[in-house]
Length: 292
View (cartoon, rainbow, N blue to C red):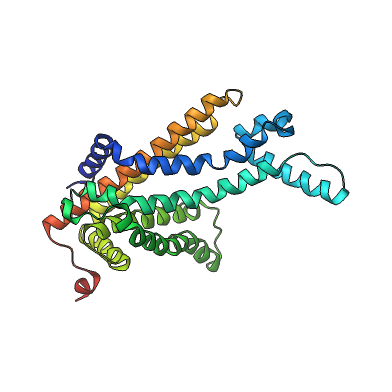
């Protein structure tokens, strides 16, 4: 199977079986809306009359949050009354926490998706509850490796006395992170396909990449391109709408979230198609067998 064929299979599977993505979409939307609750509850009070409130729905919101934090600290030091910024700061904290929570939801809910994309028989399916802890353990195993993929190039450049602001220094952490992310996506597929332990699933995924490097890396490059397109679309959906039209902004954000969930389905379906093709061609041995 070529990388293009695997990607085409992923696009077809995620689009045709879109209902499978609804639990993940519901979880992501709930986590994305959670930071808005303090703001919605506070809009009926003094916060709703602040002239700078409209900047929260614009690309200037990081500067606004930074300015509000500084103004709150200065007001406490001088004893003067401060703006009602408590709900905004609470919303910012919840928004920061929602990012790892969404990643955890993806890790926990990926099991039924992979089962369906692998076309496992009904008697071999374990569902979301059966795959929750194995996939969460795999996600926890991925976190330090992904962090190392980002930090290692910077550390090596610093030890070599080279600046990390060059094009190569900037791209190397991103490329290594994308490769690590794709490897663990393939490990999710291997885990559900038969490997019951997260470490063995990672070893099997790595062995697949070694056995079919051109097909595997080719698919990962295509998925990285798709991810860049979806990221650009979701960023535009978040910041492009007119801040004076909050309903349009909210609708665009939800459409962007749905697009991001669909892209996750494409990634898993494409990786499942490639994994199944590799295993059918020749069952992939683990790393110990490859070394032998």
